[in-house]
Length: 481
Ligand code: TYD
Ligand code: MG
Image (cartoon, rainbow, N blue to C red; front, side, top):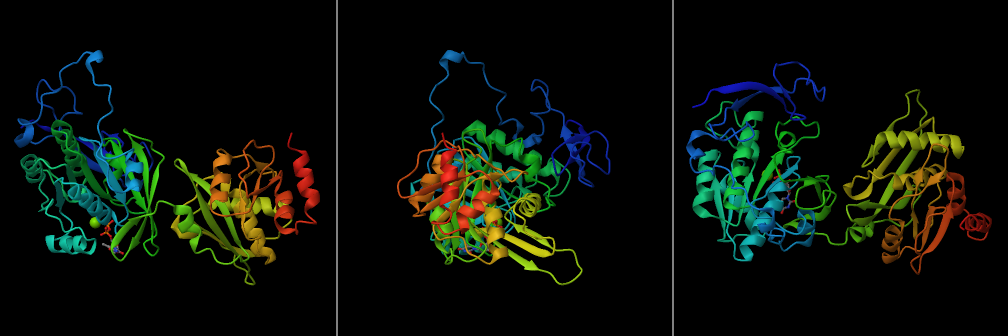
């Protein structure tokens, strides 16, 4: 056996270091460096990128590829195996690519095993075989989940196993159409020291599964647990190795789950798929805007509807704010759920300065409905109006959608893909849109579009009754040329 070289790897960023240090030299995180063994590659297989297989499977793995003339390479993209759910296919870039490795990360309990059991069922229902290797749960637990999902299928083979050699042997023996390893943190390669879940084990096991996947053309899904503070080693150090990284997000107490592509060698890394967790597992949600607006209460002070673009599609999202005067001497609290807290601080400052709203003595809570996370500045104006609305205790009009980024001077800035946002609003029966002035976009029928240049104009346009706000609308219209 070649002698292992020891280096250190950060469980946060995957960065390597020759010496141990309290702080990672790459990402500056503390206490994240872990010992990491690099086994020298056997002669003829250059580079440590190839190293790391334990002796047993080495012989069976390919000795590298033969060079092929470029002109002889098949121009067809790899054939994909589509799943029954369009929402899953979208995130995967059109279906499962043979030989690809997909990491499905997420917090414990968010629904990773459930999602992959659904995927397994869909392959099995189409006549395929799926090998589900689990080191997480007992076969009885997995069977219970599967029967809850209605996926007790003979095409799904269960392997309760932690040992990587055994898993690889079983993959070769069964030659399934899909392999699921749940989770990568429970797998150990006997050729390495270190317990399951250590950086060495996680990385080397994934690298070996990757080579096997490429060799025999089987797609492998790896489950990886991540905690909010990234405390569990794993998925982060795998992001560079695997082909596709998907994260399942969502508030466990709510039903919506978002599967987000963070990296995809075979598709767009911006896509999301939307699902809802229910009594019988997950269901896909092909029209998330309808689901997100579905429980929108009758217009209440503090509620605003915005459109965020997620991946290639617009989503109508409801934002709620609660502004409460504090009577104690404690500093007011600002709590944002589903939004960047710094963005909230900025918008509060803009509201105070440009719209003369006194918020210094108020607690402010904002929440994005459905457990969705908004990262787009295009929601700024909507958030500002929602805070204003709650402060003044006046609801925004029914059927209003608010689109625009806010600058520090209180100016409303243009946002991308305005036309698609407006179409989505019209499609869901909204009747009036506030948008940045001067933006070029077709106007869908049924949607009255009001251009606003500043926060102050937006407030007038939103809150004054149409007759009295006519002046602002005219002014705004005059600016469109
Ligand atoms: P699970 O897929 O086990 O999560 P993970 O693999 O990410 O740790 O899902 C766990 C949660 O999902 C659990 O709290 C219960 C809930 N759940 C449902 O609400 N309905 C269902 O049909 C199933 C199977 C799970
Ligand atoms: Mg699980």
